[in-house]
Length: 255
Figure 1 (cartoon, rainbow, N blue to C red):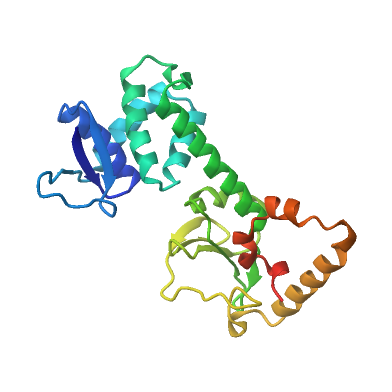
Figure 2 (cartoon, rainbow, N blue to C red; figure 1 turned 60 degrees about the horizontal axis):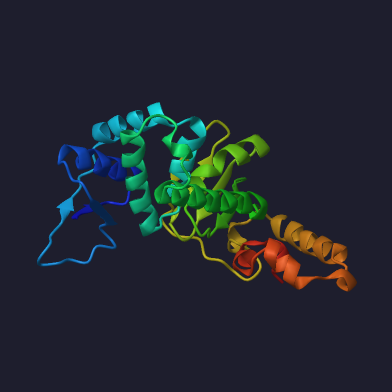
């Protein structure tokens, strides 16, 4: 078994698949540089991300995979789970080596693992679409922060562009320290010089918010409380639909 070390990017993973064939490596263990533990007896092979090699591998996969499976592959990658990177490498090699239609062989462990992980990421995406709470800043931009289990931020722009097409907005991932900014024409990836700090009541400090935003937040909290019938409260069911780890991003859970 050969050890391959890559940078954790999708381009790097696809390049690793290319190198498997280039170097004729029968069995490969794939790890990211951040998870690699140096071994004096096995330095491993350092995969250098190469756009052209990655494109060739992706093109080969697309010949065997429909749009749905292509998207599953990408969503599974966004899980950022070390074991999933290994499954994706094995999956890619299996699909390339087999006739078209092999992706439906769910008895294959890597196909099943990729499909299940993609579904987990898909569910997390839907949670973020439901739980995002925007606040209007003083310069008219609507801001929201998230801390998802997986890197689902690249999957969110289409939903929010369609829903808030007439508003400028930023959705910022506090865990991964990058965000998506929609400027009324397109969405682009951004990084903030100073990461936002979460306060008790607001996602942003009050001096950065529109003057009326705190009032709207309080009105929303009052509405939420008034519609919450205590006699019918079922906390176990509520937590199942709205896990506690998301509460700090929900304005109705503050105050």
